[in-house]
Length: 201
Image 1 (cartoon, rainbow, N blue to C red):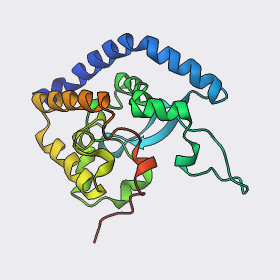
Image 2 (cartoon, rainbow, N blue to C red; image 1 turned 60 degrees about the vertical axis):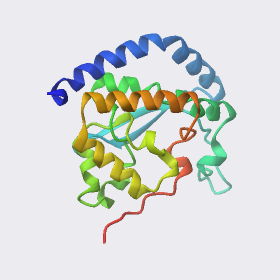
Image 3 (cartoon, rainbow, N blue to C red; image 1 turned 90 degrees about the vertical axis):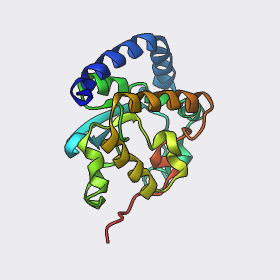
Image 4 (cartoon, rainbow, N blue to C red; image 1 turned 180 degrees about the horizontal axis):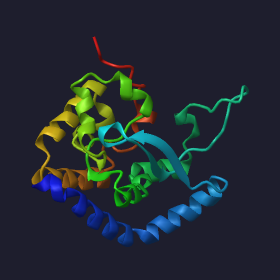
């Protein structure tokens, strides 16, 4: 039953959150507009439910500096001071509320990772794509970047098998606590974790 009304609850929750956070959204957008030379947002293709590709939107927290050969510098070298601040407070995730309104994402669910990871998942790990990806999830409140990819995917699949109202509520409460404590939410997987190379035998 909950699975059928979850998208309605997501839409209403995202709309209310976006309205409440609109002043913060506007301020961050303006600051990044100037600090990132007219590019306040970061948009990237990510796999959603059933592997369907969508464009995720986040606040742009890194500059576009390149090395002598024209390649972008490593992520950790491109994070700006303001970008690092909004990452620590998870404010860079706010624009994803637009993804929730569009129906690409849910408030709670496995985090959407890179498209290049799709062929690398085992059959069990691929179950993480049986539900919509989320802004926060079970893996994020249980270690996020401090755990291995294997553990992260185990948490993702656990969520898929135990999805429910009280599970989502528990994750949301845990997320709020971790955000306020800046615990385990200082950077995205692309910055603090090694690239996933697959776990298939």
